[in-house]
Every structure is written in C-alpha cells, then in structure tokens.
Length: 151
Image 1 (cartoon, rainbow, N blue to C red):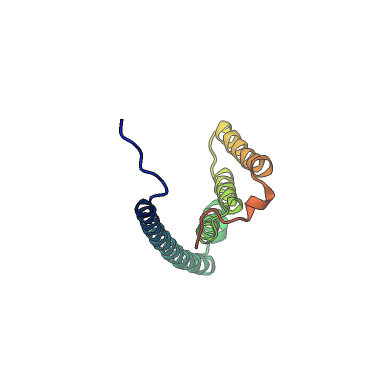
Image 2 (tube, rainbow, N blue to C red):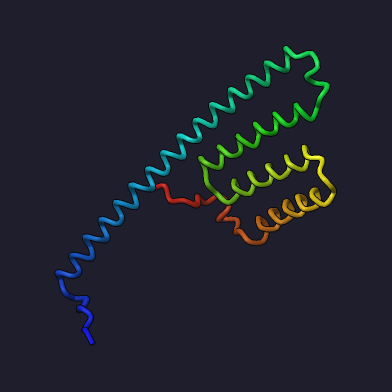
C-alpha cells in the first residue's frame, strides 16, 4: 500500500499553491470572457429591439388598418417587452429578474394564444408556481443578490 505524501512537505504545498493560483486565473479569465459575451449579446439584442420598436412605431403611423388587429399589435409589442426583460436578466442575473422574465414570457403566451383551456390553465399554474417559488423558496436577501460572481 502506497503512503500518501505528508501535507507539511514544503515542495508539495508550493506545488498545490501554484496549481491553485493557476486555476483561479483560468477561472477568472473564463468568467470575464463569458461576461463580455453576455454584454455583447445584450447589446445586439437591444439594438434589434430598438429596430423592431422603430419598425413598429412606423407601422402604427403609416398603416391604415394597424389598430384594427389588436392581437397583431399586442404580439409585436409584447415580444419587444419580453426581449427587454431578457436583456435586463443578462445584465443583472438575480433570481428576481429570472422569475420576472419567465412570468412575462408565460403571461405573453396566455394573452396572445387562443389554445385550448387546458393550455391556459397550465400556463396559469406555471405563473402561480413561479410566485410560490419567489415567496417560499427564495429568501428576500437572495432575490437581489447576483447569482454569478463578476469579480
């Protein structure tokens, strides 16, 4: 049976510290890279949402029958709202923001879809579940706490 090296050995301790320091650097690098990618995706999404909002505003004032089809208008505007919530979630990843994005997306589905009543009931149950998760499973101090360390 081989014997485990003694923890007090200075060479082993130095090697472990060196690897630990290297691991922290690599982890920091990837965290920063992922954060920059999230910011780039958020910027691209905001740009696309601004273009979509501009197109929507242009259509509101130039199309004669635009306001006659309320579901079309709601579909486009609520899609922009869900996109904005998504950007907010990318910029500030807290449990509260994630639950808000899910709530808005599911609510949009309930408002716009004219599926069978069971589908609407399932969506309403999902929203109730999200409120229950927020109320009973997440502490108030954790709701605004960033989920990802930004270092």
